[in-house]
Image 1 (spheres, rainbow, N blue to C red):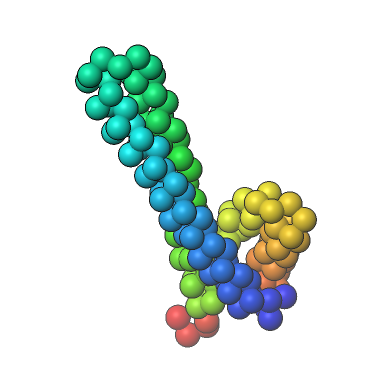
Image 2: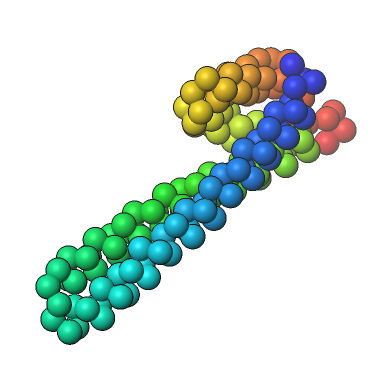
Length: 138
């Protein structure tokens, strides 16, 4: 299982990169309802019918999509940090990797389940745990 730690770290780096790209896409996607909301504010100030409801709907949509973007960005950063830590065999990276294997299992059901279980088995089995033990001279 020690041989699978570096590929697992590379996999976590890839997952972090993809999550970052999704977060960027969602942020760009949240921009357009916000712009429509700005136009609706102009209409609401002129007393146009339905402009206030459109403004609330657009800003609410933008806020909800922005919240999803924030979640994806936070997860992406966690996967990137953990991928670097796994490759460097840092002891904290093992525990973070175990925690991040669970959302990976449910992210993309057939493939994510395989990768998440691989991560859990690699990091939980005694052979994988030995790879993160400090050297005798430290």
